[in-house]
Image (cartoon, rainbow, N blue to C red; front, side, top):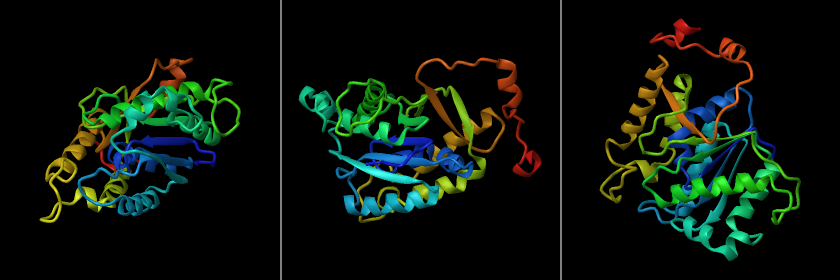
Length: 263
């Protein structure tokens, strides 16, 4: 159970998903003084390479690289998140995945939740997007039953990180100064991203797989004139009370200056 107050909670279907998709943003938030946690829903036990035990060690190492306040694993069955979510008797029970996640959200009261986009090739990613949507809503419903009795709470916003589907971001976060941290966190998952003669070939360890994600960060960075950025989509419409004040304090895009020139 995540029982520490957090500013941001990133929810991942499997260990390594968050690192690949928004690890730079999480590292940046930590550097800004925010308390950030990750909740992995499964242990990744269906992965073609590695073991759940080894994956747990790798995720702990990545958590240290990112400077997380907490990292927990919900222990749902890898490959079957949709099955658990669609079974009414499980979904409604206090031990079901929605209720478990409601308890966690109410316990750590995150201002922001990062969840996967529903546009994904992996069924667990699609199911996790739905699970996050349901849990965030019911966390704010007073009489929704869950194992931990707590006050209703609803995060300010759900930010959807992109998987491998090509989407147009609603906004991007400059991670140029945290690009290396992201790469180091991903590299912690040697069982998944390194390919040798003993490993089963997969998308994650394909020779160009990692560079493709890095290239996307570079493309998103190019949209705002920086080296690297991560893109997100939003659930719902953003309310801006005073557009002048909002954009007056926002960091302007200065096209293609170096880090030193921007300081």
